[in-house]
Image (cartoon, rainbow, N blue to C red):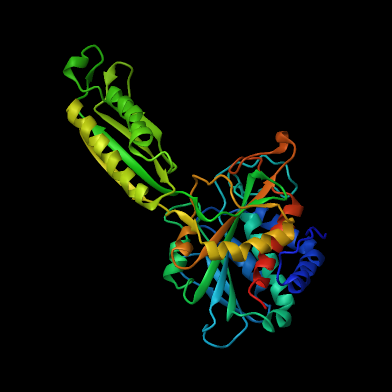
Length: 414
């Protein structure tokens, strides 16, 4: 199943071809690995069997060092090339492991066996791609060892990306980024066509913070609003007014969004409630703007309560930081993507995402790059977004993703 295209960019074409040949020859094994993961999804902080399955498939392989922990199902596998105490450093390649609480509707033969749990965000593909590359490197260990300029390649299988505070920060505390020169990640993206990718410098995924707000005041009869505090009116005006923070108090050149996503109030048609509960998210591609939005949101809430004579309780929950791609790391990752997908297939500029990623924690510790890997269908009727119950990734794209990780490993040779 040879899927790579010709390009003159790659500096280590020979070594990459050895790894790609292994992936082609093991394609059915790799795809069966994915099918098992897809059929047996586990939610954030529940990935015990996923971890066990991956480790069972690599435990007998040579040249590896496994690091696992009691407070997370995430782990990493080092392929050791130099016994120098990591003096030459390591490179991190990361995949996330968790599924989503979604009822699958794909109709696949290997669809989820677990009710209301599904790999609807492609994390089964990420794990499979990393596994395929890991096996390819080990299968060609001597060739890599003779030319690699690192002490080790670190293959990180990370739990709980979908659930803040996320699994990345736990692995960082355990030292996953110690002696690491660069870190790399990949995410399937159906908004990009199959056979394409997007790899940009700078901010690529937003920081996200959550908020929970309770406004309280005098409840009363719907017939006598003058004797009560109309919290529903206040909350409605607040929701509309907060959008001025984005349109008039934030630079139009810095993407940012505040979304109210829940609104709970009242228990009867003729009673004005004494309490309203709202919640939502704050997102930005700029760290300074991120902090400013939180301050401006609370200022708007305080002003609203002063006007209506009510009280509030605001809880801000810090989420993932901005994911920022480093220029040097992008330059390492780019040829690895291009040798697989073909010259001109890797966009250097594309839409940034207002979604968030805890890969950002790795990027805070070392130069890093995160690529958007296209898996979109040509037929719009078959093209479903991430988190959709019919989302799926084609086999050829999965093999290409494995080859990109393998090509990236070859970038550290020569």
